Picture 1 (spheres, rainbow, N blue to C red):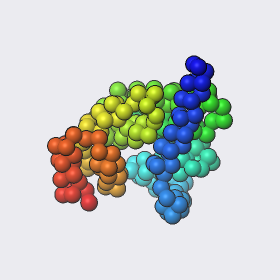
Picture 2 (tube, rainbow, N blue to C red):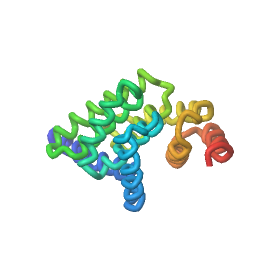
Picture 3 (cartoon, rainbow, N blue to C red):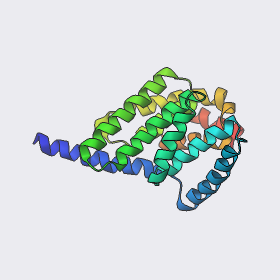
Length: 210
């Protein structure tokens, strides 16, 4: 019976990881648009004209494309490792998220399980180290949102969303508008926030982000 339950949990985990990353990934036409952006950013990088914001944007593009494109996975990992000294919080979070994508791509169920738990542990460490970093906390929350119940992450996701709803109004200027817009959309659609906090976040979103 125990083996049957273990197998059931692993199958659920595999399906949930695939769902999580398919939900996070853009639609096909948006993926094509990202590839166009990628070419421009890589050109600027090679010519030494990519500024700090552009460097982080390039990493984000690698991450989103890596969800459905294995060739981007290694590129993303190598890139974030290369810029880690300048963007340690974000690089740590995205490297953990890319490791979670490796769990999705792993062939053997036990490998999927072990890699996924390793990735989650690193995300937890990143949030513990940089608790007020909006992007770091959202990477964890959005990755864990679709995980099955036996990961025991629902309460942590709710807590992350509550913290984010408090951090965003005072810290949103440090991030691209489209990123804050996507984060707000994700949180509000989840319906995880208490009603009063959801109203405040929605009001901020309508006044400052859209």
